[in-house]
Amino acid sequence: MIPQLALFILQGLTPKKHEVKIVEEEYMQLDLDEECDVVGISCMTSNAYRGYRIADAFREKGKKVVMGGVHPSLLPDEALAHADAVVIGEAEGVWEKILEDIESDNLQQRYHEPNPDLDRYIPKDFSTLSKKRMYNLVPLQTSRGCPYDCDFCCVSNIFGKKIKLIPVKHVVKDIQTSGARNFIFLDDNIIGHKKYARELFTALIPLKIRWIGQSSISFARDLELMKLAKKSGCKGLFIGLESVLDTNIHQYNKLKSLEDTQQSIRKILKMGIMIQASVIFGFDDDTHETFGQTIKFLRKNRISVASINALTPYPGTRVFDKLKEAGRLLHEKWEYYDHHTVVFQPKNMTPLELQIGKIKAKTDFSKIFSIAERILGNLRMPVYYIAANLGYRRLAIAENRRMREFASHQLPDGSDGMDWRHI
Ligand code: B12
Ligand code: SF4
Image (cartoon, rainbow, N blue to C red):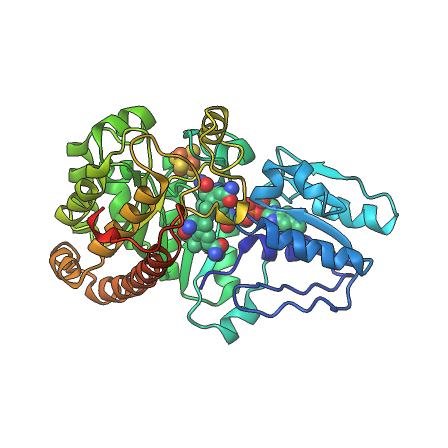
């Protein structure tokens, strides 16, 4: 339901003399016989192979292919086996140059601009979306870069550790020209720069929009900022808790303390802002007990919805390097590097146990009883709460069904079937 902002930025950067067509494969059919001169492809790790297949197909037809986005930025050499050129990091300041270089037959293989000028406004044409897909959330971005540099994350590697800001007036212009009412801020942390966040939320108030975004849990420590966010239309925040075990907290250094986290959750929910908590299973401290303990924590604290993931050692992160060095990667087939599939040997259990434990945790969290119990903390937004939970419940049921089919047909040791519910 959320279009890729990168594609609209590329369209906005393209000089008017060129014609641009955006194809989002999530909901559009790609035509490999499309009449065009240049094909730009954006991908992350899990869909990199698909991106490469598309790149190969277009190159066979003589088109120039340029790849960009998270995965090509992390592994440009790999991408260059399929593309004529790769953009490492941001497109601003290089896309126009690439088009010029193609026109003058002087295309280089790598392009990288570490400090693009974000003060320049780039027009984004969301008009096709708002007409055809009224239920879309229109994507906005206010910042890039993250100072935290967590072991399992590639963001500071690609966008730097310093937070780079997009002027508030540009964000307001994007909102006004879109004509939409529902937005998502794609920033890793919408309150990463407090002074800027204050300025932004204040500017949003008269626009009367609804928005969701991502933030760190420290949001709850600033009551004034929370009130301002609420007033500006904030309906929900995606918050990375990652682990609710004390040992992991110290190892990954994300949360202050469990007590502090619980208090923060209470404050945010009380403000009428839904919390989508992200948790990850598979850290070295995790045991068989971690699944149950985590779900108990999420339920007790009335978390609105949860994104329950398997630790994924994405290339370009320290977790990847460590697990690779220890010989603990099961394979490097990128299509399985998707947060859903276990791709490494966990420390205290088998990969299958981690996979099943994660799916069971998801299923437990989305049981009707759990939804009914957690609504008590979400009474200020019951409609959003129920709609979101039913959506997540559907996903959990589908994942659970696929796991049962897998477990009863294809055991790694060749035996047929197992009763995985006892794990
Ligand atoms: C917002 C977000 C989401 C939103 C996506 C909404 C949407 N449809 O846009 C939601 C929450 C839905 C989401 C889901 C997922 N996400 Co996400 N997401 C992000 C986040 C925070 C921002 C991405 C973004 O849009 N940024 C804004 C745009 C403008 O930046 P950009 O895409 O990087 O584009 C710039 C450049 O890269 C470049 N560029 C990009 N493409 C191209 C192409 C060409 C040709 C050129 C020249 C340049 C270029 O130009 C752009 C402007 O400078 C990133 C973290 C991050 N900071 O990157 C994680 C991130 C991309 N997500 C990640 C993951 C794993 C996922 C999921 C697989 C998780 C899951 N299992 O649920 C899913 C996949 C969903 C899907 N089907 O695509 C990982 C990817 C890691 C990896 N190595 O692949 C990241 C990096 C998070 C992380 N910390 O690890 N995500
Ligand atoms: S996980 Fe979040 S806080 Fe940690 S480095 Fe990545 S974007 Fe920053």
